[in-house]
Length: 386
Image (cartoon, rainbow, N blue to C red):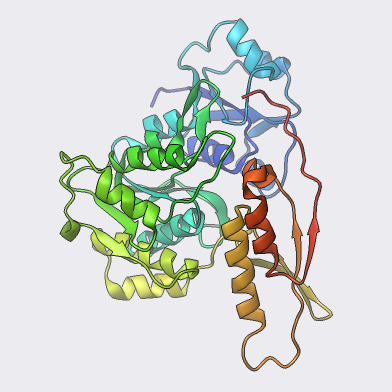
């Protein structure tokens, strides 16, 4: 650690960037950042950490704060005034401009064993659950997760143990690095929950998408572990076909898991158990951790009930995730023994690039049929050139 290093994060309000800011602050660095506007829960989290946040974007902030290293969020593209200032006026003196993934690797992954959870669906919950099991086992992991976890009361934790548990995102890294984020994370243990085409703004087809995961799998060392969903054909194709012979991962050395189709939480739990057993956590500790797991905000989170109406917030955006969430909610609230059938209203905001793409139109229509009434928000526009 370079004494006195000052980090500045452009795009600090996103969950991942705010979490990185928190980890850097806890490690003892000076940290500030900027964003166009702030939202909860990241707004309160950064305020509690006493991290200065400038809004909206302006080159003045950069000139005023004089950072040693600038971290450029992956939503930041050419045209952003602060990024243009960095590019036009010389790089910061110590580390120039870097990506979030690079800094995670340099500051927090090197020297530890990384447990990286990937997949199109379920990675946030699985990451949070694995982290909580290791915490209950006294392993004191460092944690980096893409959602607000109930057990850690936040999205990150700086631990002193030998493991770091990270959510492995397959989205691209930065405007200057179009490789997937999880290629940077050097997995000792890798989890691949499932693979289904997503992020169609950067992946042209399923083959390109699978290639990102194939490269991720190839990073796992011989003495590490791959946890793979044996009931997902795309995952198993990669496990059987793309694994390099030099890695020598034998079937006996892998934990393959899977339950009936659609039972995502059960599959997440199976993956977490496989990882926990591999690192030596007892069955009893695992059971207690699972029983005390509080979940992640915006993952089927009940945010209020009044006059017999239950309001639930969920982050699901891919048509498969939408479908499975609706099926799960119907199963839960239309359980056997409930006399009055409760109607399911869906209010869906197409926020991701994939949710606005015609390629998924028919799949969304089929998914929405599991709700009684569907309201669609008008998609918001993003103006950044990435």
